[in-house]
Image 1 (cartoon, rainbow, N blue to C red):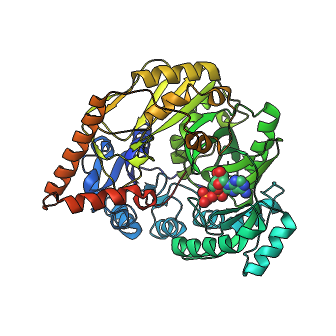
Image 2 (image 1 turned 90 degrees about the vertical axis):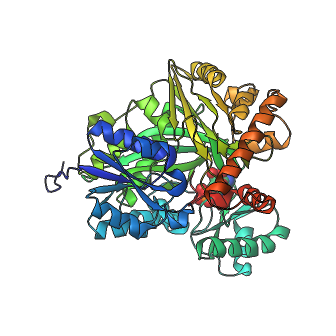
Image 3 (image 1 turned 60 degrees about the vertical axis):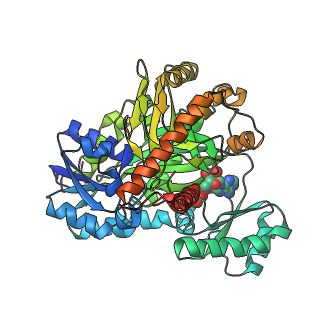
Length: 514
Ligand code: ADP
């Protein structure tokens, strides 16, 4: 405990986000006795977060760049309404070093790490240099940008194929290319650079060795302003679709207490190397031989934080609030071992059996599962309109059991109780996964779900034509309502282009996150 760091009591916090994570933060604020304010865009004016917060402020129209990404306007709003701090949630401005710096300058606490830590971890080569220097294994490969094709060819020869080209400013899988053989390198190098330039305004790329069939295992850390950094165990996030996490669990089915200790120590070292404060996640690739390598650090709360909460009994958002007010982390955060097993499934408004096309519309009927060991973190309610403007994640369903088997049984039971009508969701995919021998046995790797989907495995349960018709009718009504609200008739052409836009998933997101 450093007595020179005063306790700065928050009386009001502005939540600069939407959907389930805004709701999650508002809940923690209420439990802490702190007043909550939330921003919203036009389509979110009746969002669950707006209904639950003590205060709500319109920030702009639908497009993220005109609303949730309006950093300076958000900071000024916080000052106007007398908020002591901003919680950025995940996505949008959560990993934007300029935004957190602006908060610092304008005297509003940013609930997250320093802008310097965000900036360092935002550069893949800078973070690799720093973390390797701290004695943590990083994925083998370079720590310098490859300026020419010639340099790329020579470096690939040195480390051996297959290799991964990655944007140094990367995120969301953009500017990333797998190259299996020398023939493909030149084209991939050019493509990676141009995609990186278009996505990040920075076209520099570097190279890593491609790790075959790894698992994605990450460690949750917390750091306070008094120099204490703790690791709260791991999460297994190997079930991914195109590098986006779909199902997460804790503990990992393959991490032994010994490996957990090693990975937690490595995560703490990584966090210390940047003087990290607040909540963060150190991501590793774990190869089939049991070697692990630092992949990247996410400098914010993760979508999948609830599985850690369920097996540790901690509240990570309340921990974030305490740290940001200058509180020291107590003994309850030390030497934790997972109690039982937790699994989270991400419920997206997407049709998993038609290319994961977004499924906007009105939620006509909604029944959440309840009962022992079940938690829903939702951003919607019955009657909510699901808009095409944002990330299509509606909710997370999290279950806890005394072991993995009981957690699986509860997941199956909870999914059987769950009803969402009016839109398509990823729920049928989870029901199918529970029938899959590899998923049930915990035989996971980051490509497994994509391979199974490509092979036509994980077929849905049969559902009735009536359900299809109900979804189509609800979607049409939703689009007609939207057209009416915007004052234009629901023309066929307009409707078509909206759907085409909806098919491009990246265009729906503010900032990518995982
Ligand atoms: P981004 O920041 O763009 O999301 P990451 O570096 O986090 O990129 O990698 C995203 C995903 O790509 C990882 O979760 C993993 O599935 C895969 N991946 C990244 N690097 C490698 C590698 N060197 N070998 C194998 N898979 C990789």
